[in-house]
Length: 308
Image 1: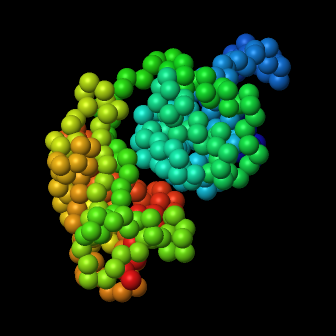
Image 2: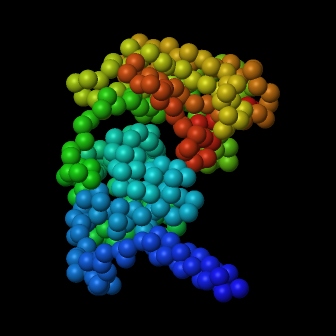
Image 3: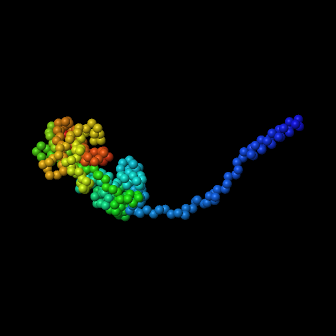
């Protein structure tokens, strides 16, 4: 019995020895353990309020990137500094203002706030001003945006944007009957953004003005556009099965005008037909479309007619 107890004691001692030999050495002291991280001795970077980074921090992200607005739902995309810059500078809009006075081709034209649509939206005296769901920007905030544009609309690294080969633009359209009487001024209910009225079983002409002058010396003569057509659909948001008519260069008229002849007999009385103009100067991957799907409905109904 004494031998058994002794053997058990030896076994326990051996086990304890093995365990103690397997135990890791204590970790060395971390010299950073005693540093107090609760106090930040640094200071925030002071951003130029008239830079794209300053505009994003102080205006765009606070006032414009609201849920369902410029939060990536549609352009401009104000979620980040990069997305703000890239969806503003030299980005085409082809917008006719609500007051039907000014037409804008690009959201931001570096060095030219007056002809930049962004500047018009924040200064407009019409109901089309931005931010549309908030208090209007202050005079100082507007001035910061204007200064950024007029100083070249530089990116977050201070680089002046290189002007790309810009897409051509549609400057406007009109509609005339066979007797060359303008008919697009006769709108449903007398409202300019409603469809204009077209007689049933008749031929009417739809000329549109287009140019590529924004490219300056690199501009393409409109007569050389590779795409010049008008599509017609009874669905204002779906042109996948639209009727397409190729436009002809209207040489007798001394303007940059293309024209299509439309037979209203294709549609029954009471039908509202929406149309979109497509052009390409031969240097663009995608055709320029007016009005685009992302535009408000009043642009789509402005570019429409009703058979009567």
